[in-house]
Length: 363
Image (cartoon, rainbow, N blue to C red; front, side, top):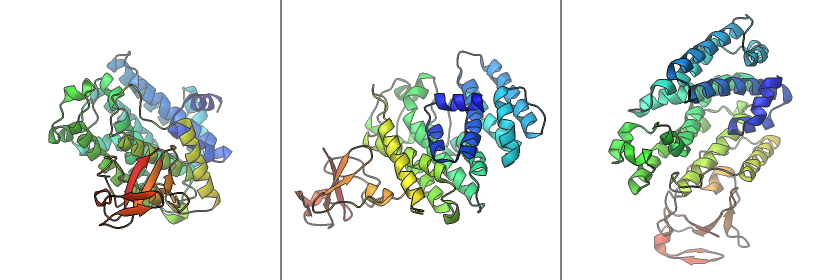
């Protein structure tokens, strides 16, 4: 596992980060899976190499992983390390084939007309990784397959929203063309990095679809398998928080400072996942909606309430703030749908109270 571990350690990806919560045997197995995924993805993303050459390289990886799955000796060192894992957990070649098809889509497709076309891409490059991963994690209920598919799509849509600027630099636009047309956003605006209120509405529409898949993932994860899916749930938590950060930044990813989670924020999320695991908690760490989608006074997006999503005890007389992992403090403003909302820190006008709850970011 020397080469697989080295590649995983070198990577700063969120997927590699999630392995921390796994026992050694499964951590090594996931490192081998990650190394394979990283290798084929790097082939597809190497724009300095001709498309035809990359297609040939991906075909070579398909043939070689086929050898590993069929009990023959692979030629590539990563697949040689991966083969015992494939045999132990009975990972099927069909899923590796789908994953490579997803990488091949990046060679040929730089625009997606509809959400349905994008769904297929998300399934191949993200959900398939989840389907392979749950075989390593172990599960009792086959509903975990649906969970893996939904969570993979949620994570990939979050990735797409985060990486719009970087993808545009490579002439790629993953946001569906139907959404661009609906919101009056042109391809040139995205390729040139021009942010607008129209782009915000476009991104929010895609984020709504991502939230739908997060919700489906939570609904389909069987209670008896929640503990075995601790690494996947950590991934869900990390990307859920990333989606929230994108929302707070109104999806403006075109500036000089990327919207992403800091290392400290990720460590806090790992700690929170470990605490839930140790406490045998079955409560979800993401995907639960808040009744107040937008704060009309401060203009900040609040489509999800951290109090509900992550078990934060909420405000008290001593501390009227929600404490969020990224260090931001959110004041609880009121509990009535009309009249003034009150807290230990003061009062707010009636317009500041939405659907019975009011919050404003401070500090």
